[in-house]
Amino acid sequence: MQNNLILITTIIPTYRRPESLKRAIQSVLNQTYPHFQLCIYDDASGDATEEVIAEFAKDARVKYHCHSQTIGSAENFQYGLSKVHTPFFSFLSDDDFLLPEFYQTTLQGFEKFPESAFSMGAVIDIDQKGGIIDVVLSKWPDKDYFSPPNGLLEMIGKYSNWTGVLFRKEVIHKIGCLDLNLKAIDVDYLFRIAAHLPFTVSKKPVAVFVQHPSSFSGSVGLKLIWPGWQMMTSKINEDQNIPLNVRKQVEQMLREDLANLLMMNLMRSIAAHKLDEARTILNIFEQQASRVPLIRIFAILMCIFQAFPIAGRVVKILLQWLRKIKRASLQKRYKKLIKQCHL
Image (cartoon, rainbow, N blue to C red; front, side):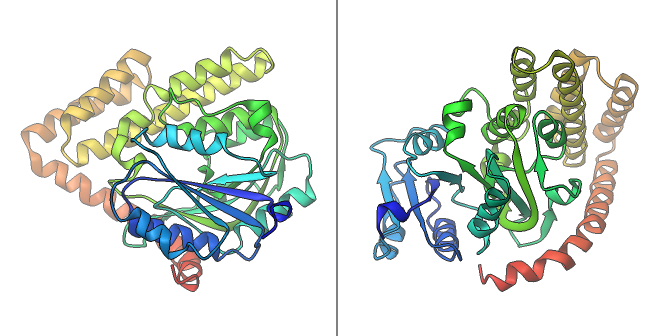
């Protein structure tokens, strides 16, 4: 393919996940829009990763680079970003995959709104068994264009990850690179862009995000949101290009979002009888002086669960039942779509 026809670079950083990497690569090659290159950056895996890449070597759109030594996940994403030379780019983790019309759908967003910094489609969150957990973008209003700072305000509390996002290359020059001081580098990057630049949205599912214990989001747990949310709040507060009233509103919304995320993790920790982690979360709430009456109730519940472990198991069963009810409609709506992709 001639280089002047290549409009999109998809970046896949990878480390020791050859089987899921194969699925991710195939999902890119299955795109209905053909003018792209797929750049895979191997973080010195030292396993079967190179053999997987060799299976796709006949396709000239597949590019492969292996680092001489491990640099880390976030640094690998940053490295891939620094190598982008096409008008558009996207990020894809090696354990996630795209649906066939990802490029086609997001490019249509740019055609309709050429000034957009990124074009975002819906991402289906699934578990390891293929059970559908959530489709966050389904909670957004029925609008296809958001200008700053309204886009940022909409994103807080119901953001989608960047697996379903196609970026314009210009955002690198206007917003900068990834902030490697944060665990949630994707959330921070989307927040920073949405605070200053417009973007377009389609509720059509374009990608699948797989949640599992060995994934980055699953392995870092509480570290993913603390103290990252505080750092993101401080960065926005210090940005003089954002009106003061907006900064104050964003600060309040991020604090509420942090409290919701911590509360969710607190309930999970108690239900799983991870009392040390639960105490850590309680200490964070005390430092923030947030939801004090509710936290006192949880502190009492912890004492009960510690004395009577069976109570924790009852709560765990109750949470699983509620989660099952929530997922039922999503399973019916989206499961057929994923099966049709044979991935």
